[in-house]
Image (cartoon, rainbow over all chains, first blue to last red; front, side, top):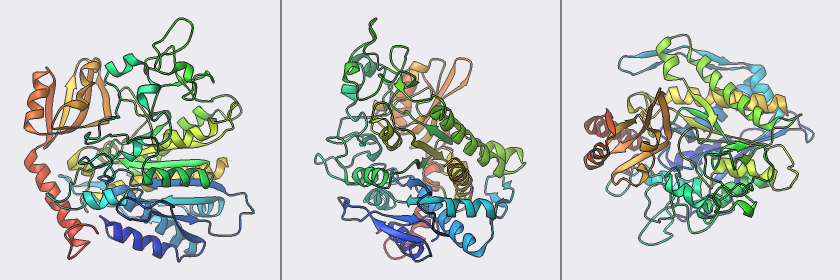
Length: 403
Length: 90
């Protein structure tokens, strides 16, 4: 499956991978507006786990224009399964980035014990192309298509086309209800109710889109304990929440209507404005699980593995330097995201029933000359592929070891 | 479109840019680059760059329109190579 893959070639690769031992291909339940069936892999190879496998899900392709993650996810699965069958680790040859000037990245190895652990300890669910209509449109030359297309292709409010699937999940979807009125004046929200918004239209209601419903079912029905959503191109591994800064007070949660739309007050209501201290979204961090701390460890470990695998060259290291952070960082907040949705499932019961881990990988850099931003060239792709494989190996290994 | 970095000494000056016509902002690129130095990246046409500059923001062109068009022409050729006959995906 040569990069850049088309929707058809992704589907063909899913079918081919589904013929390998221990792998099944499963269809999602909702056809896209373009009539596509989204499919995913369930990988449970090796000896039967006796019900003790850790359930881990990885998705890519929610945003149409982010071309590399679906390809890298599928090449990871193929390498993982073929090398497991062969009883060998996965060897990555040295790679020369085209530059200019050309930059050398050293070879690295994912050891066989790591491969074996991932394959035999996990129920691994892989959904590589969540938004096939959008991907096809972004790979169609203008004036018919649009390389920068991000959303799906559903016509919600004619003539406007498309919903940002990653603002459409059923988690604090209605930002006008969730945030204080003053928050909107701060212009720190990357979400829009304007159907004409080119990037971040949230849809007509929560989970209005087939792609969202498919992903929500993928997360819930497969009882995922670990969830990773791969995007481009911010060179970052992030953890929830995306909608507010994290806090320790259980009552401060998105379901608590006491806080809806209200400014901060002295009696402790309102204040969902991203600035604290009146409100910070509850993120459990008590012993023994220390969920927030473990998210941080997962993200930083994956970040470090990417850097290690770049090799010793200073330029290569600089080009593979990721950040690890809570998702908003110092900038914009987002509602209705996949990662917040996956993470939120454990908090629907109070007291919370941990534990679900949810991460975002923003693969590659925004620098067109380095990683092609949203659409690397064939020559640029191997660097991003190596980074995604390094991060995934690390996350999956930790999931297998932590249980 | 060109790939740009938008710089300011005030973080709040880099907020509210999602509504600038002709600018595709990358919200997750918002970063602190030094003491009282902030940046955010995006893709912009000429009028958007002018509007940003009129707001008092510093705009650095990272990839010119010509270079971005050449990059896009290359990737479109590469996708066509993988999908002969249809010039794009199915």
